[in-house]
Image 1 (cartoon, rainbow, N blue to C red):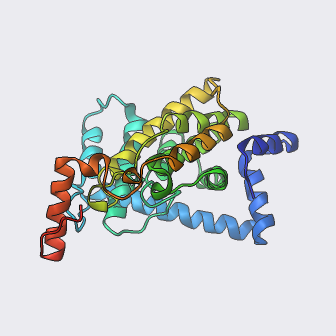
Image 2 (cartoon, rainbow, N blue to C red):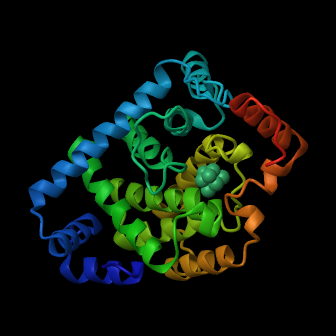
Image 3 (cartoon, rainbow, N blue to C red):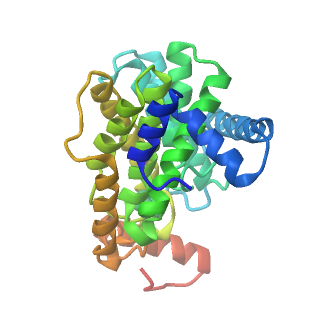
Length: 300
Ligand code: SF4
């Protein structure tokens, strides 16, 4: 359906409509479903996102592996008790929310894959934190989710969003880009500024490898979501100030695709490279699989 962010800008400008409306109209046309049905589905996804954030913040989430240590709850408690986070109130709370969703995912809880389970923390963290800080309605957040979805569709059509295919740049990088573009629109930016935010955020995450310890979507995945939120906020502020990416967003996505295609397979979700292949990463994997299988294994 959508293969170019530049064409999305041109459609939005020629019809004088926001990006989310262009994307929603495209979805109506391609799915044959009604506006109301699509909006109701998206509202349910927003509720699932909110529930996953709330669950991860309310108390420490425990996972079968034991690799996750309830850091979202720990960090959230700390920033609420001590308002001294260098990242500031909105970003620090978004970081906590991103980690919360990552931990709920690692604990086999219900999340919305945006665009994947591993990167599911970024988009809800950004949108729900902006709602808290700026008072946006759920209806506005649902519109932002359509914008994010449209950006994700373009990325899928030009590249991919799988760590196994393109490294973590494709997962958390795409999530940051989707969140950045939708956040700019939510904050009153133009379609062009939204797309510059996509380019700026993704540019800063190119080359990021996928290296999950023990092959589990926990370490470094949960904290990568936190980092992606910070990249997203940076890109949003830059784009809203009029800073532009010299490389067009579509070309940044194409570059990500080429980088992912040339990435050694050790850095594409095989748990054989990067942090997974460090002495500590290997020891954690060995300990986990020994516990799980009741036997020693050299698999990792
Ligand atoms: S490291 Fe790999 S599994 Fe983890 S979030 Fe990134 S792409 Fe997903």
